[in-house]
Length: 359
Image 1 (cartoon, rainbow, N blue to C red):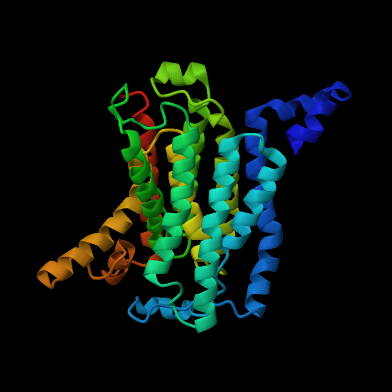
Image 2 (cartoon, rainbow, N blue to C red; image 1 turned 90 degrees about the horizontal axis):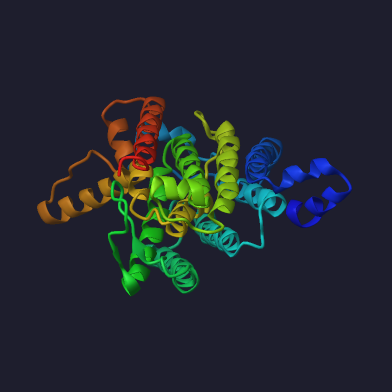
């Protein structure tokens, strides 16, 4: 909106020229989402309380979590709304990649909303069936990945690996199932991580902040050429989206920090997890995203290891999964688990950014 309606008025008022600067729009997109969450968050939380939209707690979870039963959930709604409103004003909606990113973000959010709604209606932690949720995730991911395959340019199927200057090889059509699995896996990884007050929100701030930096340099010919990474025309516009999400997560964390006043719910975790992978596919960081979101990878890996070990050996590796619950069961206070996981997430982000020069 700013580009469409305000920037053309620069001929009458020169200061409007700032709307042409990507960095300006990016900064204010983040500020906008953050303040939208600050302003409307309490009203949305109060509305959720009135509707008795409370969280159901796993019966086999840590005993300390029982006091959280009834805490309003579906707080991801105001993350999605704030990002969409911010992007309508600060984003370049003429960019197909921006529209695709926003559409996938909202689509995964709608799937998460349905899952949360069914949990609340049934008054337990059973929402969509595992098959139903996976079916929805695969459907959304398939549409996004196939669109990118057909419209992303000739280099869209190249696979880039950290520490290697040139693409390793062209995946061809195999890039489609690879991309779909990446999107579905990322969506579920964030969903599994969202189990402690502030844990997922804090990690997402680090991940999207890193993606914002990568999107910015990927969209600039000079920076991408200097660093030896693929130049993606228009990728810089995704910086606006990424920082808008960072601002929204900061605003959400204000209410989600321990003791949480609201939980993200599947509406937030599925949408944010899915769009992480979508961004990585667009800017050609499909492998690097495993480092950027290293904590999310550890969380979903712990679940897989636990299930495989129990089925094959009849024994559990961890006291409880996802792995953050293992540390709680080991006697770590919740706040210590969260902060230590944030530190680990920051370390992964630094390592990921360092690969830009070490290649």
